[in-house]
Amino acid sequence: MKDYPSKTGFTRGHHELAYLLAKGEPKKPVEPLRDVIQWTYTGNALHPNQKPISILTPLIVRLSEPGDVVLDPFGGSGATALAARMCGRQFILIEKLWRYCEAARDRIERKI
Image (cartoon, rainbow, N blue to C red; front, side, top):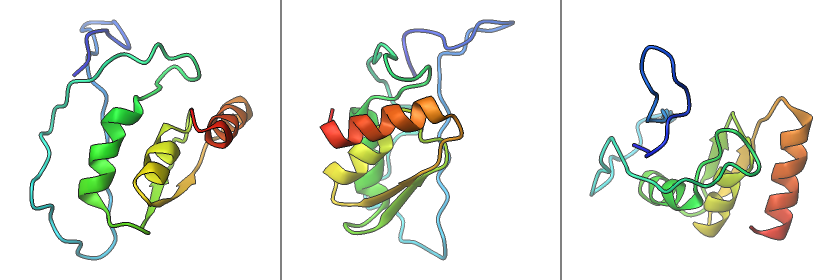
C-alpha cells in the first residue's frame, strides 16, 4: 500500500500489483511475506511506476536463492535489476520503450 494514488477514477489506486511466477515446484519461504507491504514514494524520477529497491529486496531474498535469475518483464527504471544484484542474483529485464531501457542501463551501471 502506498500513500499516493497512481490513478484516480471511480476509486484512487493506492496499491501496485506484483505477480510471482515460478517454474517447477519451488520451496515455499520459511517466513512468507505479507500480501500488502507499505512503502515510501520514490518520486518516480526515472519511470511513472518506479518501485523502491527496498520493497523489492525482501521479495527477492525470500523467493529465490543466490545465483538464481530474476525476470522482470516490465523492466522500467531497473529497480528489480539493482535489487537482484544486491541480493546475489542474476537478472533479465524486458522493456518495450527505449527511453526506459536507456534509463535502466544507466542506473544499473551507476548502481543508483
